[in-house]
Figure (cartoon, each protein chain N blue to C red):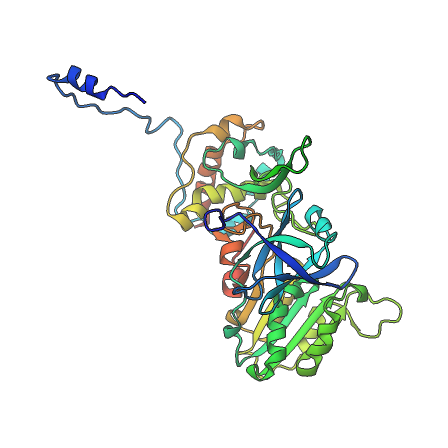
Amino acid sequence: MDSHWDLLDTALTGMPELQVIPDAVSQNKTMVEIPETIPQTVFDSPFWEDYTNRCIACGRCNFVCPTCTCFTMQDIFYTDNGKAGERRRVWASCQVDGYTDMAGGHAFREDKGQRMRFKVMHKINDYKKRFGNQMCIGCGRCDDVCPEYISFSNCINKLNTLVKEEN
Amino acid sequence: MTDINPYMPFLSEIKEVIKHTDLEYTFTMAYSGDVKPGQFFEVSLPKFGEAPISVSGIDENTVDLTIRRVGKVTDEIFENYIGDTLFLRGPYGNGFDIENYLGKEILLVAGGTGLSPVKGIVDYFSANPTDTEGFTLLAGFKSPKDVLFKSDFEDWEKNLNIIMTVDTPDDGYCGKCGMVTQYIPDIPIKNVGEAVGIVVGPPMMMKCTIAELIKKGFSEENLWISQERKMCCGIGKCGHCKIDDTYVCLDGPVFNYTKGKFLKD
């Protein structure tokens, strides 16, 4: 490939060098206070029942999330050539039915509020505990996309209040 | 290729098939390498997918996989027989460390197919009875026709104390019946404070059995459990088996109860 950096360099010779400071969004109007430690006692709190009643387990919050990475291994074979196909990873959602289904039909977290609790804990507590970084980047996509208007940021703030009350 | 892509399985030949019940067969698969009881393989067939199956027996050049026919993948696995091949990847998980139990009294409680991940432990102490101060296997099954490893039970009875019970007896059955928990109080343990308890089975059975063992005087650090979860990848990536900050496929499936009791789905 032809590159013409040499021409550019010649053209720019003698020009003054300017300091450029890139401008990036560093915060918006939505502020959250994340509890430092979350005791297991809040797992069974009636706080989650609100989400049990509202969530319809569509999984949209997971599928728009830039940090959600859960997947399921799946074999896909083509109808026009049954001998060709692929084993691939397909996106999975911890909010959708079947996420924890095991052989024999046993499943965990059938309650949607507990699925919400699982997701919230993963984003703001569990992941950090294991890998050292806060997982949620605060983009707000899950808030925007939820057909039931469940707000993740509100949930974090309410959870923070709850944790303070527990202590 | 396997070095680069952790999802790439290898072919393994079926060496032997043991039919326990209509739904549960043990497939002896060609494999040489380090495996521990309690570890698992991802068994797969192209077009049908993968399923995590725990190791129920270990020999020099083979591993036993006891498989229950309950889904798309396992249905297809049952269509295969000696000489056919399955795809495997693994072994995954931490497994049971026999060293933790050497020279101790052991009470192993297993429910149904929960016996297969711990069968390697029973096999070991059956072959080396002097390595334990006393070994009791308390195994529960749904009904007499669901009993697994019948011929192994005959072997084990020679060296170990075996209690087998079924939930619902049928006509002509003359063994013990009822839940495993009702037999725990009467099992003689010489030094309960030092004895090891291993519990594997359905979640409710594990919960009740642990409660019964603690009531009997077992200390929590001597109790070991193995957790069953959906494990799609086996290498801590897919997220299905995650509990809190624990990935069952990496940190488990075997947990000491001091850690296991805090795992809340």
